[in-house]
Length: 390
Image: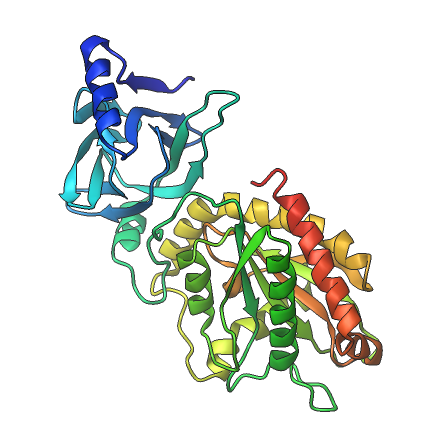
């Protein structure tokens, strides 16, 4: 079913819009469309230029809010009545001198299952677009998205339109009082992965195609939820969590890539996820995932499925690239419920570079040339992934 259209191109109203545009550098909202999308609703806001935006929920009554950097409203009416697809009406007004606000009055509880910013395309004539996918949820889940507790997901952060250089969040695992895996010789995972993350940052930035945000850039403790929040608040396009492993059997070796799933791909991966998710407890700062596991499950299923698919696509590209420069474990793409991979709007993978308990892997990880090859393999993967990003 096509989306219904409300446009600002009627006679004299369009002329006044053109005049306003010529007198102001601010972009304009020129169109709002609403229609069914899967089991939910899709809202599309079209603009003449790039803006910054923030999306969040308010209760009593149930509303979704989009705060925008200064824009003009080019539609003839400031209140648009819908009365369908879970939306009663959409209102526009000035919230502060530097903030314009769109309020979506809801007929029932909806949460933002995904927010996308799309650049204009001069060839096809497609304008700038802000796209929100709205998903129906129980009232308890909607209220949980409004009343954010420290251990739950924060609201969608202020996001800028994607720059020419993608932002990669690098997450060196462990740190501080949590050393991670430790070899028989006393080599600590937290030191190895921080060294590699810094070298990978240099390779990515030197390409001119990427910017990098680090969840830690020293021997400091960073909670698992903090790592997720750092990536989201930075507006990361991808999160790469960097680790090395240790096994009781010294013959076990090879790199591997992990993505998020409620069910583990195998017993070994389930145990690895359990150990990694204990990182906060090891550091003495454990934070429970949620006070209401049923609400948390609903929120995760509604907001993360698309991101999980993108994460899996990234992992499938990454495995053969890593395999070209290092041995891989059997079934090198595995999955489980890793807490650090739970950013609902940032594709995330966890990379195990090898095993400190294996002599060959440990020797390779001490080699500058090998770490450089691993970094180049990750760079190649990202280049391929962003050719057709999710």
